[in-house]
Length: 149
Picture 1 (cartoon, rainbow, N blue to C red):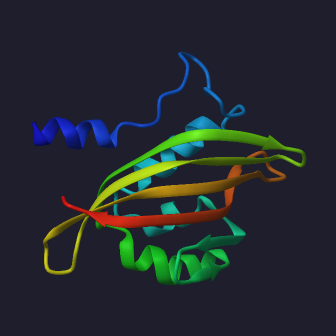
Picture 2 (picture 1 turned 90 degrees about the vertical axis):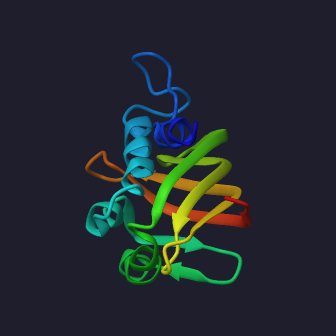
């Protein structure tokens, strides 16, 4: 049973067959790759999803710029997330090539001592289309709370 839960949690978001679901072309696949990257240990690959001027906002602190996001958030959490599910509740397209995705998030992680923890909450991602056509995270807001594993 636990294996099924972990496998289901690691599955990419659902999009319409042959399409991107509610996301513009290319963003659904980029988003799925970002979610999947949290299950690995490659910090550079995960950092590459953020725009140079990206921002991450948590309840108690904010990180400005991809280098700072990498040095603080990714350095602390990459390799510890064992399951991440981000379920979009709304996807809003704005002029200028930005898409805001907001929804619920659940995750499991390993702490330093090896014990497993879990969190649940809400998230908001602002994706921005770059001049080369790639999608990058301009802003991430996370508000999660511990739950029993």
